[in-house]
Length: 221
Image 1: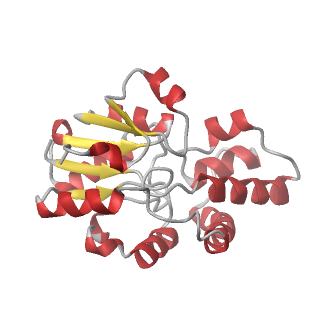
Image 2: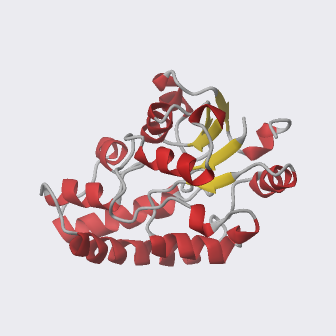
Protein backbone atom coordinates (compact mmCIF):
# COMPACT_ATOMS: atom_id res chain seq x y z
CA UNK A 1 0.00 0.00 0.00
CA UNK A 2 1.43 3.34 -1.07
CA UNK A 3 -1.13 5.89 0.17
CA UNK A 4 -3.64 6.50 2.97
CA UNK A 5 -7.02 8.22 2.58
CA UNK A 6 -9.01 9.11 5.68
CA UNK A 7 -12.66 9.85 6.12
CA UNK A 8 -12.84 12.54 8.80
CA UNK A 9 -16.02 12.56 10.90
CA UNK A 10 -16.38 9.37 12.93
CA UNK A 11 -12.92 8.21 11.80
CA UNK A 12 -10.29 10.84 12.60
CA UNK A 13 -12.47 12.35 15.30
CA UNK A 14 -15.36 10.69 17.12
CA UNK A 15 -17.89 13.50 16.68
CA UNK A 16 -21.05 11.62 15.73
CA UNK A 17 -22.79 12.96 18.83
CA UNK A 18 -22.22 16.58 17.76
CA UNK A 19 -23.18 15.98 14.12
CA UNK A 20 -26.32 14.01 14.94
CA UNK A 21 -27.38 16.51 17.58
CA UNK A 22 -26.89 19.37 15.12
CA UNK A 23 -28.80 17.67 12.30
CA UNK A 24 -31.67 16.64 14.58
CA UNK A 25 -31.91 20.15 15.98
CA UNK A 26 -31.81 21.71 12.51
CA UNK A 27 -34.29 19.31 10.87
CA UNK A 28 -36.75 19.72 13.72
CA UNK A 29 -36.47 23.50 13.33
CA UNK A 30 -36.70 23.37 9.53
CA UNK A 31 -39.27 20.62 9.00
CA UNK A 32 -41.06 20.53 12.38
CA UNK A 33 -40.56 16.79 12.85
CA UNK A 34 -38.21 14.32 14.50
CA UNK A 35 -35.64 12.15 12.71
CA UNK A 36 -35.72 8.41 13.43
CA UNK A 37 -32.50 6.38 13.70
CA UNK A 38 -33.00 4.35 10.50
CA UNK A 39 -33.52 7.57 8.58
CA UNK A 40 -30.26 8.90 9.97
CA UNK A 41 -28.31 5.86 8.84
CA UNK A 42 -29.82 5.90 5.35
CA UNK A 43 -30.01 9.62 4.57
CA UNK A 44 -27.41 11.38 6.75
CA UNK A 45 -24.32 9.25 7.36
CA UNK A 46 -21.75 9.91 4.63
CA UNK A 47 -24.11 12.03 2.54
CA UNK A 48 -23.43 15.52 1.22
CA UNK A 49 -25.38 18.41 2.69
CA UNK A 50 -27.30 18.76 -0.59
CA UNK A 51 -28.55 15.16 -0.49
CA UNK A 52 -29.45 15.41 3.20
CA UNK A 53 -31.35 18.66 2.74
CA UNK A 54 -33.14 17.48 -0.41
CA UNK A 55 -34.36 14.41 1.46
CA UNK A 56 -35.68 16.25 4.49
CA UNK A 57 -37.16 19.12 2.47
CA UNK A 58 -38.74 16.68 0.02
CA UNK A 59 -37.36 18.35 -3.10
CA UNK A 60 -35.51 16.89 -6.09
CA UNK A 61 -32.76 19.49 -6.28
CA UNK A 62 -31.57 22.61 -4.48
CA UNK A 63 -29.47 25.34 -6.03
CA UNK A 64 -25.87 25.79 -4.91
CA UNK A 65 -26.87 28.99 -3.13
CA UNK A 66 -29.71 27.24 -1.29
CA UNK A 67 -27.43 24.39 -0.18
CA UNK A 68 -24.83 26.82 1.16
CA UNK A 69 -27.41 28.90 3.00
CA UNK A 70 -29.23 25.94 4.56
CA UNK A 71 -26.18 23.86 5.46
CA UNK A 72 -24.06 26.62 6.96
CA UNK A 73 -26.66 27.33 9.62
CA UNK A 74 -26.50 23.68 10.67
CA UNK A 75 -22.69 23.55 10.51
CA UNK A 76 -22.35 26.71 12.61
CA UNK A 77 -24.42 25.03 15.32
CA UNK A 78 -22.31 21.85 14.97
CA UNK A 79 -19.11 23.86 15.51
CA UNK A 80 -20.66 25.46 18.60
CA UNK A 81 -21.34 21.96 19.96
CA UNK A 82 -17.74 20.93 19.26
CA UNK A 83 -16.54 23.81 21.43
CA UNK A 84 -19.14 23.11 24.09
CA UNK A 85 -18.06 19.46 24.32
CA UNK A 86 -14.30 19.95 23.92
CA UNK A 87 -13.60 16.90 26.10
CA UNK A 88 -15.21 14.75 23.39
CA UNK A 89 -13.83 16.69 20.42
CA UNK A 90 -10.31 15.35 19.92
CA UNK A 91 -8.39 13.24 17.43
CA UNK A 92 -9.13 9.52 17.68
CA UNK A 93 -6.86 7.72 20.11
CA UNK A 94 -3.57 6.76 18.50
CA UNK A 95 -4.16 8.80 15.35
CA UNK A 96 -1.51 11.47 15.93
CA UNK A 97 1.14 8.81 16.51
CA UNK A 98 -0.03 6.86 13.46
CA UNK A 99 0.14 9.98 11.26
CA UNK A 100 3.59 10.83 12.58
CA UNK A 101 4.89 7.38 11.65
CA UNK A 102 3.29 7.56 8.20
CA UNK A 103 4.80 11.00 7.64
CA UNK A 104 8.24 9.74 8.65
CA UNK A 105 7.87 6.97 6.07
CA UNK A 106 6.82 9.58 3.47
CA UNK A 107 3.51 7.83 2.80
CA UNK A 108 1.16 10.12 0.80
CA UNK A 109 -1.99 10.92 2.78
CA UNK A 110 -5.13 12.97 2.39
CA UNK A 111 -8.65 13.41 3.77
CA UNK A 112 -11.88 12.71 1.87
CA UNK A 113 -14.84 14.17 3.73
CA UNK A 114 -18.45 15.14 3.15
CA UNK A 115 -17.79 18.21 5.33
CA UNK A 116 -17.95 21.66 3.74
CA UNK A 117 -15.03 24.06 3.38
CA UNK A 118 -15.89 26.01 6.53
CA UNK A 119 -15.65 22.83 8.59
CA UNK A 120 -12.43 21.75 6.88
CA UNK A 121 -10.89 25.13 7.76
CA UNK A 122 -12.15 24.70 11.32
CA UNK A 123 -10.58 21.23 11.60
CA UNK A 124 -7.25 22.35 10.17
CA UNK A 125 -7.05 25.25 12.61
CA UNK A 126 -8.25 23.36 15.69
CA UNK A 127 -6.23 20.17 15.19
CA UNK A 128 -3.24 21.68 13.37
CA UNK A 129 -3.77 19.19 10.54
CA UNK A 130 -1.32 21.03 8.30
CA UNK A 131 1.52 19.20 10.04
CA UNK A 132 0.33 16.03 8.25
CA UNK A 133 -1.89 17.05 5.35
CA UNK A 134 -1.79 19.39 2.36
CA UNK A 135 -5.09 21.29 2.50
CA UNK A 136 -5.12 21.63 -1.30
CA UNK A 137 -5.28 17.85 -1.61
CA UNK A 138 -8.24 17.44 0.74
CA UNK A 139 -11.51 16.42 -0.94
CA UNK A 140 -14.55 18.07 0.64
CA UNK A 141 -18.15 18.95 -0.23
CA UNK A 142 -17.81 21.80 -2.71
CA UNK A 143 -21.44 21.29 -3.87
CA UNK A 144 -20.26 19.30 -6.93
CA UNK A 145 -19.32 16.21 -4.93
CA UNK A 146 -21.51 13.14 -5.26
CA UNK A 147 -22.44 11.69 -1.90
CA UNK A 148 -21.34 8.30 -0.62
CA UNK A 149 -21.80 5.44 -1.54
CA UNK A 150 -20.94 6.91 -4.95
CA UNK A 151 -17.16 6.42 -5.48
CA UNK A 152 -16.64 10.06 -6.59
CA UNK A 153 -15.12 11.28 -3.31
CA UNK A 154 -12.46 8.55 -3.18
CA UNK A 155 -11.71 8.68 -6.88
CA UNK A 156 -11.00 12.41 -6.49
CA UNK A 157 -8.77 11.76 -3.47
CA UNK A 158 -6.78 9.11 -5.36
CA UNK A 159 -6.34 11.49 -8.26
CA UNK A 160 -5.11 14.27 -5.95
CA UNK A 161 -2.48 11.90 -4.55
CA UNK A 162 -1.63 10.64 -8.06
CA UNK A 163 -1.83 7.02 -6.92
CA UNK A 164 -3.52 3.93 -8.27
CA UNK A 165 -6.68 2.78 -6.41
CA UNK A 166 -5.13 -0.63 -5.72
CA UNK A 167 -2.30 1.09 -3.81
CA UNK A 168 -4.64 2.95 -1.41
CA UNK A 169 -5.78 2.15 2.11
CA UNK A 170 -9.07 3.87 2.99
CA UNK A 171 -10.07 4.42 6.64
CA UNK A 172 -13.85 4.66 7.10
CA UNK A 173 -16.50 4.38 9.80
CA UNK A 174 -19.76 4.35 7.82
CA UNK A 175 -21.45 1.72 5.65
CA UNK A 176 -21.98 4.24 2.86
CA UNK A 177 -18.31 5.18 3.13
CA UNK A 178 -16.89 1.66 2.83
CA UNK A 179 -19.19 1.06 -0.14
CA UNK A 180 -17.85 4.25 -1.71
CA UNK A 181 -14.24 3.14 -1.17
CA UNK A 182 -15.01 -0.33 -2.55
CA UNK A 183 -16.65 1.15 -5.64
CA UNK A 184 -13.54 3.30 -6.12
CA UNK A 185 -11.55 0.03 -6.10
CA UNK A 186 -9.45 0.89 -3.04
CA UNK A 187 -6.78 -1.74 -2.36
CA UNK A 188 -7.69 -2.09 1.33
CA UNK A 189 -10.52 -0.79 3.50
CA UNK A 190 -10.09 -0.35 7.27
CA UNK A 191 -13.33 -0.07 9.24
CA UNK A 192 -12.96 2.22 12.27
CA UNK A 193 -15.89 1.43 14.55
CA UNK A 194 -15.17 3.40 17.74
CA UNK A 195 -18.04 5.76 17.00
CA UNK A 196 -20.18 3.51 14.83
CA UNK A 197 -21.37 -0.09 14.51
CA UNK A 198 -18.86 -2.85 13.80
CA UNK A 199 -21.72 -5.24 13.09
CA UNK A 200 -23.10 -3.00 10.34
CA UNK A 201 -19.62 -2.65 8.81
CA UNK A 202 -19.15 -6.43 8.95
CA UNK A 203 -22.45 -6.98 7.15
CA UNK A 204 -21.08 -5.23 4.06
CA UNK A 205 -18.59 -8.05 3.56
CA UNK A 206 -16.05 -5.68 1.99
CA UNK A 207 -14.01 -4.42 4.95
CA UNK A 208 -10.51 -5.91 5.23
CA UNK A 209 -9.67 -4.95 8.81
CA UNK A 210 -11.66 -3.69 11.80
CA UNK A 211 -10.19 -1.43 14.50
CA UNK A 212 -11.75 0.50 17.34
CA UNK A 213 -9.09 3.20 17.12
CA UNK A 214 -5.62 3.77 15.68
CA UNK A 215 -3.76 2.20 18.61
CA UNK A 216 -4.73 -1.15 17.06
CA UNK A 217 -2.81 -0.43 13.87
CA UNK A 218 0.71 -1.06 15.15
CA UNK A 219 2.84 -2.38 12.33
CA UNK A 220 0.63 -1.20 9.47
CA UNK A 221 2.95 1.65 8.46
